[in-house]
Amino acid sequence: MSELAEIASSPEAFERFYRENVEGVQRFVARRVDDPYLAADLTADVFVAAIESAGSYTRRRGEPVAWLFGIARNVVADEWRRTAKERRTTERIRGRDLVAEDDLAAMHERIDGESAARALYYELDGLPEGERAVLELVAIDGISVDAAGRAHGISGVAARVRLHRARRRLGDRLRPSVLEPSDIPEVTA
Image 1 (cartoon, rainbow, N blue to C red):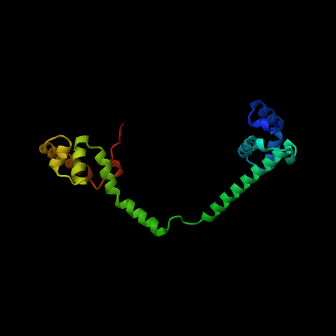
Image 2: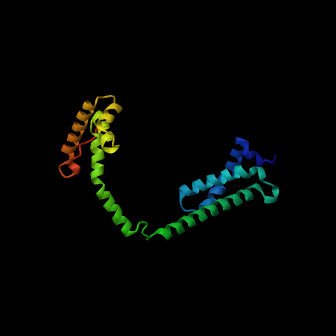
Image 3: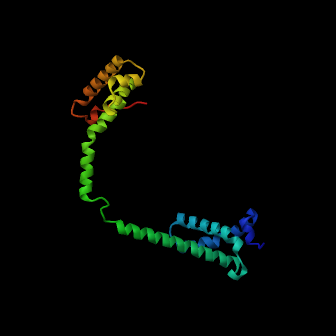
């Protein structure tokens, strides 16, 4: 095994190789990149790539330092390509409406139209569990009051009382216009 191939398996060999070459790689990267964080990341990427390909190194590729600078050149070039692609993509979508005006208007209408439903769901969460459960089974799931009572292990009369209470509570809270933000009580944990 060549000395360079050892950097893939020997922490001591890698540390020696790193200490001997890190400044040169940093200078190489710093001449090509103006962001210090990106330069640090790319320098690390160079050494990771060196570890990964150390086993395939041969003298034909030149001296180890030349081989390492070849890796550095590839790492920086890959970053330039990635950045250029990202910039092209950003430029293509810049200035374009990702949502057409008609679609945006329809979404606003849909949101406004569902405000009463959102208020109702908010208020449902404020009901006592037993009342809410009966109301959901009857009003949302379409189950009879007696069947809702049986599903919760209570009599039909008790289910009717819970349903009546739930409707009264919701009616009292939802009547004043559908709910203004100031009408929504704070939720405490």
